Figure 1 (cartoon, rainbow, N blue to C red):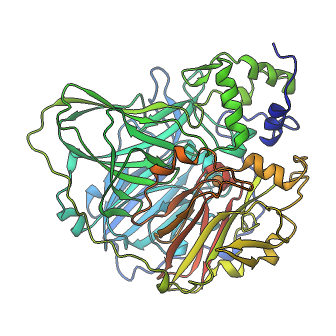
Figure 2: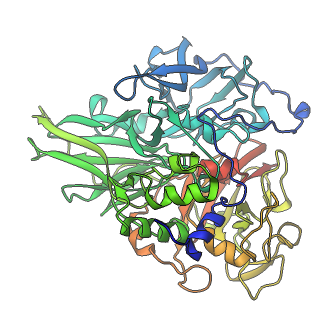
Figure 3: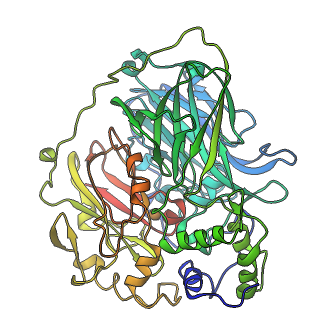
Length: 607
Ligand SMILES: [Cu+2]
């Protein structure tokens, strides 16, 4: 029984956007608001391959039903593809799976992909990590209606790398990806193929996602209430589209290509037998040499390639686990989850019977089994759980030794950037309980002067949190130790927000709200891979206490080419990114997909 709801819980509920007007979310698919944006000025631009494509593919996005759990099939949205021309091995279909087929291309190939939208909704697909012309990148400007086709044509310029493709539809990326639309996009090149790395059945994808199911085996989704602030979290982990993922392996070395394809969940991966995690590649392909870590933090959108040798483990089961961590979620969430755990409400990491939370929900919303209750079934962020099991059942005929060196990796240097003294800011802030970038929300075709970038330049970028810390004037933010004027884009928005744009009463001041929703964000930049040159830890004072940072800090692998990077509360990250070959609009955004859909996204305009 609950006598009273204490202030902290009341604040959590308010910060998470419930307790005033809470919209019960329908079972997926949700009805999505139409955007008023006129895109007449942005008719599809046919690109110029300059010749006929080497590979031509028909890609269909459609509704389907696939077996996931025992019993009823699950209604999903999925990709399906076939090779119309060229190497038939360019498309590897996955049977009985909602995941899209694996694309395998070679550097230098010219590709044409005809995307047929057979979804009951507007849609566009983005090739995450792939360096393509702006019109080919899946900007929401180019989304097509149900029944329409979008034709992509581009040359594969990437080095060998594990990329992926997923929706980038306006305000609908999260729901569409969650419904199943995602697939791997692997690029191979000669140098990578010549290296002594595991191949064929020893080179395997590990796509990690989380989902919540209804009683009749259907995907359940919401982006309302707490899920709208922290992102959607599921009650079950799926690997390669399957629950309770178990793989029989030989006692030899494997190459695992990891993708975190979850909407918002961050994993802290470790081997159950105490072997360190050996990383040989990241978003943009192989590192120059292997890197070992006690655990690996992988946030939504990121890829890492692991080397794992099961030598000497025959007869054993080795588990890939996600370990406990803290500090990535808003403090209120973590306090709340600890409190629920302390009250014995967790069962197998979930809310068992609805308990206090359910009663509280009944009191506050008159609906004890509503959307909030479904959402609260999720595996708490930062709890420990199994991701995948590997049973070493077979003896290998041969094996490989981990090479000391992998492949040459050109290093980007600050002195080669066009703006070494003035990094371009990517300031994470908030307006009420919504996150902003450089003080702004996404506008379809808008780019500010600091978001306008001359073509064929290298740029220094700095990502940091700016929630209107005191002692600074409006419209200014500290960047690399200098105060930089940001007049036209921060003025007034960052501080003293009593009410957010939806008219909901905030928590009585921007600072307090900022403190309550401060969290980690996986930032993704479209266009081309960047390199991280510096990760500056939280200072430990001011808004960001840095609490929990030590539970994740040894799990970042910043080497190599990246397109997505997790920035922790209080951290600053400096990176160098080239803007080569193509002019036009490329988005950068948070890859917590609920944040992206809530407009935590902006454009870079390459001119
Ligand atoms: Cu975010």
